Image 1 (cartoon, rainbow, N blue to C red):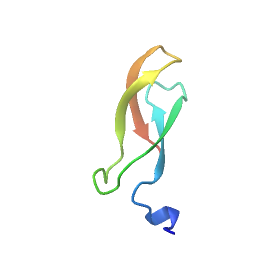
Image 2: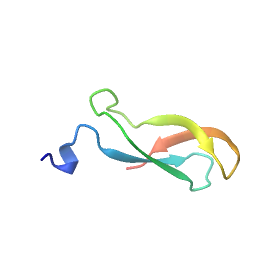
Image 3: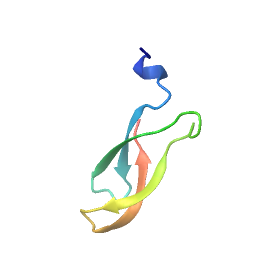
Length: 56
């Protein structure tokens, strides 16, 4: 079984850039996305779509 640190698709937390503290949890493919992941998703606290950045 693969170690969590060398997993090709690790679990990452996406934190809202609106400053609300809201997070999503998803997986990313390290081969396709070696940099930090940024996704535009819905933040229910501010009730709008904002950028969510990968936390490390």
